[in-house]
Image 1 (spheres, rainbow, N blue to C red):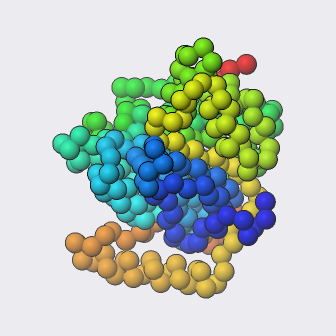
Image 2: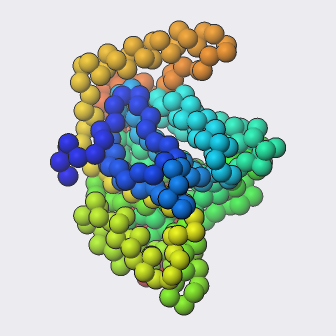
Image 3: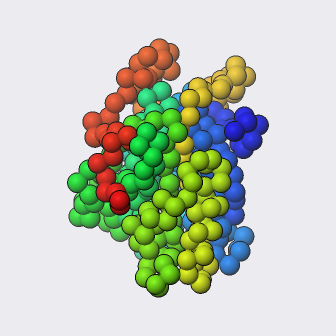
Length: 327
């Protein structure tokens, strides 16, 4: 795909929202296709999508959330999520980011607001995708090496008691996460529940397994056409599919593209970080987007080989997924 197609994320940029979109977002080491269509062709819906790139272009974070409520309540939640994306844009470890997400929705729970969410962080030097699922439908993984799809879940399946509940339901200290090392050309499909709540020709709801079966009938290459073809096949299965709820899909594909950061962009990112840090002295101001002190993060920005050594403890190989698959 040509470099001038789609939006290339700049240093410390946060992109996204709750409005309709069909966009290609290009990041260092990762391409992302984002499609969102609010219910009833409204100007905005309850599905929230965001993408961010860190100051060095190596840390790419993508968030997909399904927020309860409508109108101004969702817009307020989306603004809060954007603020947290900015605050943690330079964090390699997304643990604190997910904790902050849950605290935010816990504070709003008295207003009846909660959200399911899928938080992912892709570290370009090692092609490791960190995944945290807060009550959201699990992603699907296409392995380019064996040309098969599988359901991408934490080894051992979900643990509803400790890690897979929506944001804002309980004041949970930690959400469970896991990591998968991807290959160039693999696909990760993230989506909201309109896809799995669609019905097959016999009237039965898809569920994750049904969606997986439909995905297996779609040509995984080229990726540019995958979302459109998938949604067309779902809509054709049963009258009313994808018409009764917001529909949002993110398709991620690792590439071999290194960070494309010009000197002016580096200086601009440093200036914004410095200004944010100075403003952060005021306790009423938004906290500055400082990085976490991981060797792969801080040291890797100076010595690239240190970044490539990032290997989280709970890790899967995309070419040999241990998650559930449907033959």
